[in-house]
Length: 346
Image 1 (cartoon, rainbow, N blue to C red):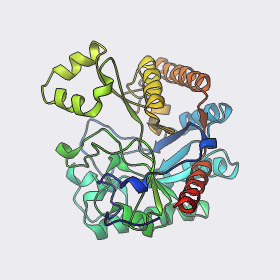
Image 2 (image 1 turned 180 degrees about the vertical axis):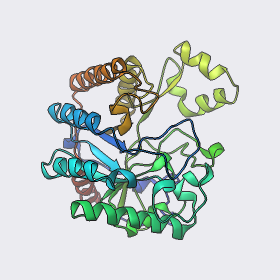
Image 3 (image 1 turned 120 degrees about the horizontal axis):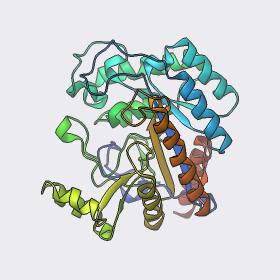
């Protein structure tokens, strides 16, 4: 496969030859990434202290649920969680049992070295100085390796905050998959990345194209979904029009997450993504949501019951559509098989 002048950065649309051709036998699959992080008040400014790692019973219950459903989550895990003896011991048992994979998740404000000022702007690690991003990434990888005996190969930046150097740094650190790109979202007004126009399907990235990008999945649904991102962004510029179009079922942007997304909308999004030809549906949520009181999405036990009812309905719909769960290894192996076939055909 030839390498173009594209630098493989995560903020640029990939070249056509960098799109990953998964083998037909892989089918359409789904994966679950859990942003495994400390508990903190989402309504307060970022701070280095004042957080906890206490939602362990909720995490254990969630792991039992997904294991029984035949789903092997990827717990992309940040520094405070992996630094907790109780959390690391629990997750280490899941890893040893082959019931889960452990990746890396970087919240710069709580990840050493602590050299930058804590602020909203600096909460996107990819926009920190390159040496700071590299040092924080290496500290996190070393701590995960200390706990589990192996460095992580899957990554998601906290707040989806990859920047111009991130793909190269991830390749250098030995990562094989990134899942930080939140296609169809733009965080540039909050000092973060702009992912508009990036694909929903996986593609090779990084200078050597050794890093797979698996974007988080987001669908456009409604009667005008064919107009997609262009129309949605135009309506957002007109203030309340976007909300009115969503309420009238004309056009909605729906990410695949149980956090704030009604189950009927999630099912419509699954169908829309399958219709688009998306081969890997990428679900996600935050680990503190698994226990009441830590995120806006699960405040009470009733909310937690609704959280699992959402998954019951979504998993049943995926089964009806013939969409099976994929593991991290299965996806990586399928991508390499597709690459070999592409090279042979060239």
